[in-house]
Length: 235
Ligand code: DC
Image 1: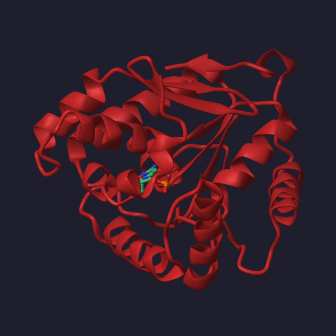
Image 2 (image 1 turned 180 degrees about the vertical axis):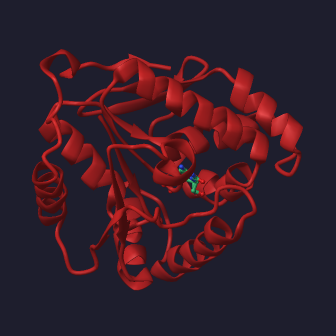
């Protein structure tokens, strides 16, 4: 069973996806972490961030790995744990170049489908999971919230990570990312036509998770065979 959750930054989809997956006992795939890992690898390789072929090559051959489980995701670059570093502003400010690269998107979508086949059941979240990556997903969600609310959430996350940013900077970064995410030529952020839309502006995370869970149940979907429980995968 493939469950997709798409939406803009700060819509609450990452936390909701992780908690939903944990509740169901299946892995979750944070596809933003894949784009972030490739971004960090490209920065460290001093790659030209507008050179599609160079970026695609890093996405294909870069020494980055994701360890996915129902309650965690760990990202490594070479032998370094970069799980936190990929969330820094240094990386966030450059992800849009990597997300706009057709070669990178082709490679990462291919990897996402491979992971889906390997796991059989997962919650996958990003910008294009219900549209480009898994158009035949069993159930699709699209989460959204006002930009002010999304900026507030991101700001608090960054503060907790010890970043020195202002709410205004985060708001500005989100505005830029919203524009590039929805206007880029390849796989722009779009609501899948068959997705359930949820506005999380005034909702808490537990409320969002409850609603996702209830929606899955009310569709009568097979709630994950036992053989798929507690699997995790390293890519
Ligand atoms: O969700 P996030 O902020 O961690 O995403 C990081 C970047 O990757 C952001 O610029 C959007 C992009 N992204 C994408 O283009 N497609 C995805 N499926 C996931 C993320």
